[in-house]
Picture 1 (cartoon, rainbow, N blue to C red):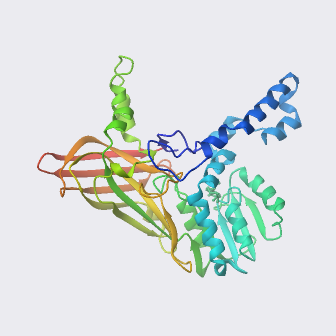
Picture 2: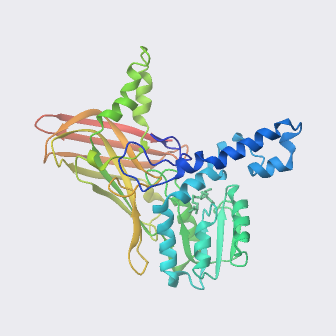
Picture 3: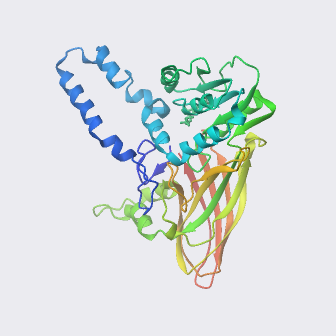
Length: 389
Ligand code: SAH
C-alpha cells in the first residue's frame, strides 16, 4: 500500500499539514468512547479460561480473524471501509450521481464491481434497479450479505463472494457497471483492469460504466520543511548517518495533503482515460509535461492527483482530489525531486512521466520522471524512478 504522511489507509485523518479539510471526523470517531467501552468489556472477560473460543467474544470482535488474515487483504477489515464511507466527497458524489440520475438505473440490471460493504449496490437498489449483482472478493462480502438483508434488499441485491475474474454471474449481460476502483495516484492497486474485464465480459453494447472518465494532473510545489523532515532526516539520526535509507525514501511517492499555497506552477492535465472505451494496456503510458512557474520560488516536489467524472448523468458530475478541492482519503501523491529547483516566474520545468504497473506485482506502480530546467538561476536535468508499493 502507498506510504503517506498521515499513516496508512486505515487511518483516515485528512489533517496532514494542510490548513483546510472537509471536516472528516474519522480520527475522532475511532478514538471515541465507543471503542473504550469495547476494550473494557473485552478486558473484563479475560478471566474466562477459554476466551478465544467464546462465541460471545467472537461476536464482539466480529470474527475470529488474526492480523495474519488481514495482512494480504486489508479490505476484509472494516477500518478501510469506514475510511471510504466517511470520505463524504467520494461517497456523497456516488450517492448524488445515483439518486439524481435514477433514469440510468430504473428497471436495469447493475453490476457493482468490488462492492465492499455494498453501499453502492444499496444506492442503486434504492434508485429503482431491477437487480444488482454485488461482487466482492474480500471477507467483507459476508458483511455485505448481512447488510443487504438487514436493509430489506435481499430480493434486489445478490452479493457474490469472489473475484470478478472468477465469479459466475447468473446473467449473461448487465446494463450498468458501477465501481469505486480508484487507488492512490489513481492507478495504485490496478483495480481498473478488473472493471475493464467486467465491462468486456458482461456490459451490453450501449451499456453505461460509472464513473466513465478520469484525468491525472501534475503540478510542482515548494515543500522545504516537509522534505527536510521526511528525506534529510536520515542524514543524522540521533547523531548517526542513516543516509542509505534516503534513497529508498526518495523512491516512495508520499500520499498526503498538500496546501494549495505550496503550488508554484500551473496544474497540468497529464492524461485522460475513458473507462467506457479504453483497453487494459492504456494504464501504461508516457506523457510529456511543461510546468510554468507562476512566481519566483523553489521546487522540491511534483504532485499528482486525479479527477473522476460521471459524464452520462443528466448534468456532469464528479469530484477532484486536487489540492484546491475538499480533501479526500486519496489526498495527493508527492514525488520528491533530488534537486531543489530555483525557478523564476515564467520559466518552464519540462519533462515526461512514464507510468506502468510493476512487472512482478501488477498492483504496484513504477513511475519514471524525466525533467529539466534551463533557467536563469538554475540549470538541472535529471531522471528519477519511483515505486508505489
Ligand atoms: N464499493 C465499495 C468498496 C470500494 S473499495 C465502496 O464504494 O465503498 C474496492 C473493493 O473492491 C474492495 O472491497 C476490494 O476488496 C474489492 N475488489 C478489488 N479487486 C476485486 C476483484 N478483482 N474482484 C472482486 N472484488 C474486488
